[in-house]
Figure (cartoon, rainbow, N blue to C red):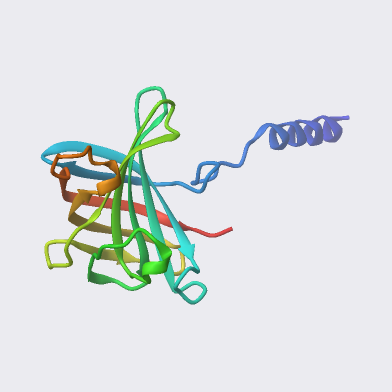
Length: 182
């Protein structure tokens, strides 16, 4: 009886234990910080393999979401088509796949409950001030961290007639996360 009780207790403990994952239900894990025109900004990064314009497992994309207190998306930073290697890479213009651009940076703003895009920004000019620097990369675990910065300009579609496009300077950007593998 003692063995049966001990066995039942162990089974009960194992059944009630929940295996915790580092990733949330969408594959996001880690933290990111930046300043947007000097104002502190935080977000939760998702780092995923991308096969668009890349050989399988040779490029990643980083999507960083900033949420309000209700958990609604308010903005995002996307750095896409990044070759998986440590070091500094220049960020380019390009939000659309047809442009065949590697290492692009874009920024989006949202309203409503986080599903209405109200502004879309991209790097306007390729130069050394727009960069991603992968400072740590462990391919065995997928752990990755780095720094980024760039100046993004609001697309004409989102700019009211007669106004100059809005510009956002993203500085002191950092991210730490893990590449999501299914």
